[in-house]
Amino acid sequence: MAAKGVSERSDLKSAGAMSVAVMMSRVLGLVREQVFAAWFGATHASDAFQIAFRIPNLLRDLFAEGAMSAALVPTFLKARSVGGEARGWQLATRVFVVLLLVVSAIAFLGFIFAEDLVTVYASDYRDVPGKFELTVRLTREMMPFFPLVALAAAVMALLNACGKFFIPAASSAAFNAVSIFVGLVLLPFADSFGMERIEVMAFGVVIGGLCQLLVQLPLLFREGFRFSWSSPLISRLRQDPELRRMMLLMVPGTLGLAATQINILVNSVLATGEGQGAVSWLNYSFRLMQFPIGVFGVALASAALPTVSGHWIKNDFASARKAIEVALERVLSINFAAAAGLAGFGVPIVSLLYERGVFTQTDTVATAHALAFYAVGLGFYSAVKVLVPACYAIGITRVAVISSVFSVVANLGLNLILIRHLGFAGLALGTSLTAILNAVLLGFFADQRLRSMGSRDLPLRWLGRVFLHGLGGLILYFLMKMASDRLPDGSGLALLPYVFGAMVAGVAFIIFWAKCFKLETTLEIVSLFHRKLR
Figure 1: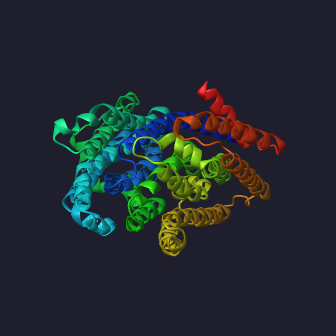
Figure 2: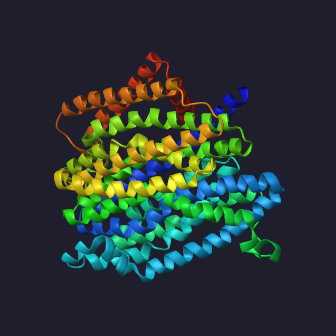
Figure 3: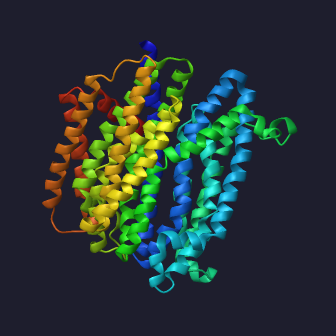
């Protein structure tokens, strides 16, 4: 029991460090989006950029926050446990070689067939003079971002396996910092470069991806990694059993983790037919969603994965189950509250962050409308981030793949129905409902797998705590909505005191609710976050 407690505290400490790093990155990401919104708003140029970035960004999300960690972390840990440090780093070297070849080939194909790709998911852009051609050009210019960030994801996974979380999580801050620099310093001189302003932002994306890789490499070398082209390391790649195992895991792993990202792509395709601004409104709103997903979802999932894998390797199935349950309760407890704030106080938040330059009040209302529907599934988006890697760690790869395929089909069906009644906002709601279905399915089959290995049944007490977290979030939503409806007229920075006050009040309510019902998980996270911020 003591060992479990130490493991849980270790996961929380790692997740806390990672959450602070991710929060720094997400804050810079919001600043990046503010700069972008001020320059481009929800215009045709903005729509073209969002669609052009969707393919490399889709691939980035699958590798950086999904299949790479799910496959590489347990494989690396097992190789190092059985064969020692030298074997672990040999496997890492071979992973880099194979990964570079594969992702470079994919990026090359994306560059060559960019026009066909844009035709598939944004053919309606042909109706606007120059918009389709601009989207194709931007797609080609940003395609090198994918191989760079895929390598950065591999480095991040290895560092996580070594117990290093802060620097890898903070590396995406380098990407955001470069984009901000480009938007504030270089963009006004676009004419001097002979480029459109939106193209300058595209090249900033590629440079940012390079920086995201470079900032992690010194720490990896300090951990003991050395790259070598010598024959014993590079030869016989196909005969390396651990490399084959990892690559076989990544193929279904990519499918298993693809549901949310493919669903976002489907949303973008359907939104292109909803007129100017729809693609941008959905993108701005989901960017806000990514803040709590990254800080409390990806961070907690990444910190828990090495622990779950370690317990499973040792056949300690009860501890593996406990680690999954604790991670799930943590992401749900915080993200239910975050969803309530985003949905109930969405208009003031969007206005404060984006309403300046060419981003109008109409854009604010539309973005907040989509944000409210996205927020419905926020806790479950984060739960999927925990459950999919956990499924691979406990050996039920097929379940994650089946659930992902089902989610894509369900999302398409729901979106085609809801878009008729709610317009572009129906796409956000359809994606949220799909995330709920995906999380429930994954949780059910993970529970069945653990039962078959002799682990105890899912305790009713755990379900009761999750219910209380959800009930608290629902009450907080109504409180936030009432407060938002009673705000005086104003926009932009004039709303800063009200948004800050709402955040303080929301945190106070969460603490009050947690103390009333003795929800220790929430109090632990709030306490840890307070210490880390100090």
